[in-house]
Length: 337
Ligand SMILES: Nc1ncnc2c1ncn2[C@@H]1O[C@H](COP(=O)(O)OP(=O)(O)OP(=O)(O)O)[C@@H](O)[C@H]1O
Ligand SMILES: [Mg+2]
Image 1 (spheres, rainbow, N blue to C red):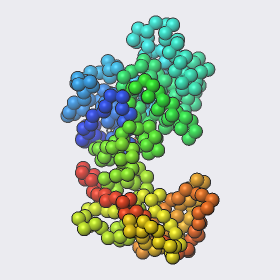
Image 2: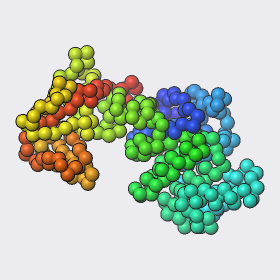
Image 3: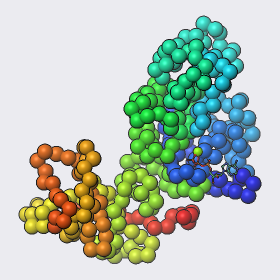
Image 4: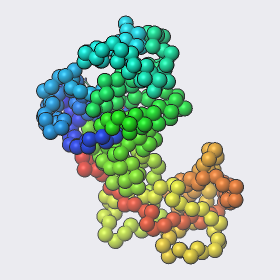
């Protein structure tokens, strides 16, 4: 609780040893607060936090064996990069020669070999972020807590650092909890992802599980895009029309000319007729908007040289496998909007 505000209302989770767990959610959903609770910078008003079976709720943050990267990469401004990295080792009484070795090794890992003597103010945002990551890893902690660790990096460097984090995670086996609002980052890095909404867990699952079996429209839209099929196809008999929605992912829909020959697996498919309203070419993907009755369905396909390309105004037939349709809840367990 912050004053009268419950930033995190309900959070019950077990992080497995060596796991890479990502907390994903929109701005203000309580991600940083959840991480700060884990880090020991704030204490829970109710509840407990255990590491290796022991309660750490009353152990101050600096006594815990953990590496942390804050959302705002808080380096010591008056210390050089090298001294920033050495500091956690000095605190642990590591000898000078070993400190120098470890610093050199980690600076190389984050591609900052020649930056040891710079001051933080002489670094770009992305470079500071990489120093912060190196500093979090330097004492070889069993637990790593990251809050938007790659937020200040451009796309290329971000992808490079993502694979570096993944390699470091595998190599050191560090139990990692990472906060992000970047869905691609979450999907790429994580063993499991928590989707947070309004201070509570909306869903927790593996990347594939979340993408393929979202339990609510919120999760489906937060992780990818979803087409609503209510009004296009009937709901299954056992579904309540007011609380359930049928959805399908854009890449699961196929487009064809209206009188294309029926395929062998037609009995496993559903179809609808529509008119193309928009075509967006995006390099590797082509995105179509198709008006079907009162709905607009979006559809994405990988661009290939032998496929038929449709134009706005074209009549088309859409079809998809019944097994690709998902039923999701309009409302969620915690009932937050
Ligand atoms: N010190 C504070 N005092 C009062 N309210 C706070 C405080 N810190 C955070 N909050 C509120 O708690 C809620 C959750 O904040 P939190 O920082 O955990 O969000 P977040 O998911 O990390 O968002 P972002 O993606 O923007 O970083 C927000 O509504 C925020 O305004
Ligand atoms: Mg935050």
